[in-house]
Each structure stands twice: as C-alpha cells, then as structure tokens.
Length: 309
Ligand code: UDP
Ligand code: MG
Image (cartoon, rainbow, N blue to C red; front, side, top):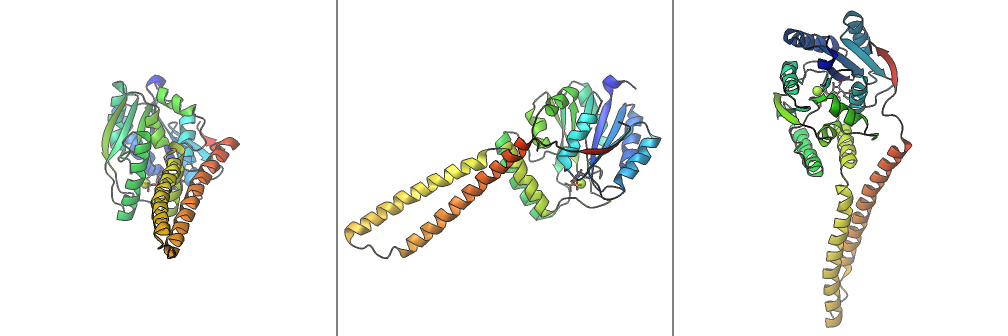
C-alpha cells in the first residue's frame, strides 16, 4: 500500500445493519479493479441495531475495513468529522451508507484528485425520487444557505473527495456544530465538480423526518449566516415606515376633527408589533442558544468503541 496515494472513505452509518456488507463489497470491487489503495472507515453513529457488529465482522476479515462507534447518536456531521479525524489517507471521500452515492463514480473523483484538484464535489444531476414537499423545503433551505455562503448549494451533497490539506483545514475549525456541506466549500482550494445520479435507497429507510430536517435546516442556517438577525432590523424599519404613515393619517384625522374610529388600526398595530417583537426575540434567542452551545465547548462526539483504527 502506498500511503501517499491512499484514499480514505468515510461512511456515516446510523441503523444501517443491512447495508454495511453490501456497501463495503461494492466499493471494494470498484476500487480493487482500478488498483486504488484505500481504507473504509465506517462511523457508527450510535445505531440501535447490529450496525457495529457488522462493521466488526468486516474489520476482522479485511484490513481495509475500520470502524468507530459513538456512545450515542451525535448526528451525521459529527460522524463525518470523526471519520476525517481517524483517516490516514492522502485524500478522504465522504459517502452515504445506503449506496445513494454511486461507488462507480469514486475512481473518476480520485482521478481528478490525481490531476491536482484538492476538493472534488459530487453534485446531484437530479434529486432522485422524493416527495414534492421535501423538494420545496430543500429548495428554500438551499436558496437561503446559497445566499449566505455566496456558493450555489442547490445541487450540493455530502459526496465529496478532499485532499489532506482541505481535511486539515476543516479539522482545525473549532465549531461545535459544523455544517460539512458548506464548510468544505468555504475552506476554498482548487475545486472540481462531478455530476452524479442519486440512486434509490433499496434497503432501510431515510433517517430524516420533517421535524429533524427542520431542525437541521435552522441549525445550519444559523451556524453559517447572521442574515436572520438582519431580518429583525428589517422588521423594525418596516414597522417604523408603518408608524410614519399611520401617524400622519391619525394626525390628519385629529386636526380635521374626524378622529375616533381608530379602533381597528390600534388592534391591527398591536398584533403587528406584538408578532414582530416575538419573531425578533425568537431569532435572537436562537442565536444566543447557539452561542451558549459553542461556549460550553463540549466535544462534537464521544467514541465508545473502535476496530482497525
Ligand atoms: N446518518 C447518520 N446519522 C444520523 C442520520 C443519518 O450517520 O443521525 C447517515 C445514514 O446512515 C446514511 C447517511 O447519513 O449513511 C444519509 O442518511 P439518509 O440516507 O437517512 O439520508 P437521505 O439520503 O434520506 O438524505
Ligand atoms: Mg439516503
């Protein structure tokens, strides 16, 4: 094995017991055929099924298979960062365990890295099959995050290959709640993109519910952008505009002797001001809780078991 050419593949896995063997063998076949030296690090994100057992089975048979197991579910981003920390390769590739990121594309990504690209991003040529509500939410989320980062994220995925330099740059970032997909672009470096078709998940189910996706979106938008806080200022100015217009109207009525029936205006204004204040406080509160989380500086994850690494 030539470590200076080695590819480390990081696979966050949560309740994927039926996918571990299948995914490993698919990647193994593709990479061996192309003669690419590799290791595969499965990061068991606190699974409740036999995921880690399956990883151990592989690790005892194949030196390329390695595993880390978290003490509980810490989330995919934490699993990605744990994998990056454990990886020893000259470049690292992140992919899903359910084969929605096609292994057949890996050699092409590796070739681009050999040609000198330091970040190779897999971009979705289509979003695969998902319900229209999910597509709409994803589109809105990526619209906001693209505006915040100045990078078009609408087709971004976690399927990425990173040179050691980019990995080191990511690992020194002290954030507790990193958003991998955006940070890997934020670090810069010479980047190439490679389109891929999202495969259907054939085994197991998606780990995302509408609620968990909403939390994920809010967390990542606030971790990357202060724009929602600006919304508070914007709301303030809009209210100020309304105040001037209504103020002029009220004064006009007062002086022309037609004042009195302002009841509707008062109620509407009260509701408007009340809701604007509450929304604003909510946004500020969310950022304060994020600061609180970062200040506590707890580790991103806790490892309970390891095999092969
Ligand atoms: N995953 C994880 N921790 C979690 C949720 C998901 O490590 O808390 C992993 C999961 O095992 C899979 C990848 O992240 O390898 C993508 O998850 P999933 O297929 O459920 O997401 P989707 O493809 O539906 O976006
Ligand atoms: Mg999936």
